[in-house]
Image (cartoon, rainbow, N blue to C red; front, side, top):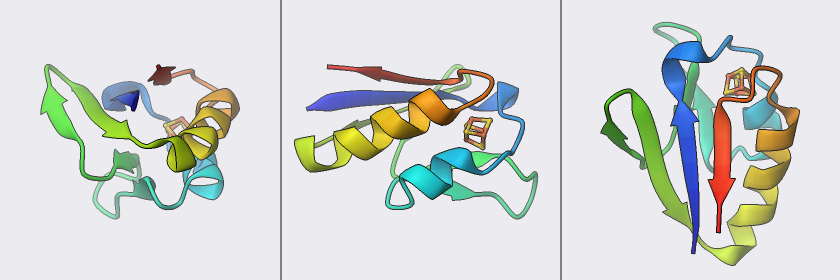
Length: 74
Ligand code: SF4
């Protein structure tokens, strides 16, 4: 399993993560920031574990994020 973390308050709403990993990222209609789907929140960080099939897409999302608020850890 791979752990994906999103520091949501620093998201600038560019949508790149959703373009790379739409199965895991959505954009909020309320505040325009990214939503890490099925994640749990802990002190402003949203965390979820994903399987191997999804991790490649999440790595691309993390690389594309211009403010580097997506972290991927094996
Ligand atoms: S790529 Fe980064 S800044 Fe852009 S919407 Fe996703 S989390 Fe936010």
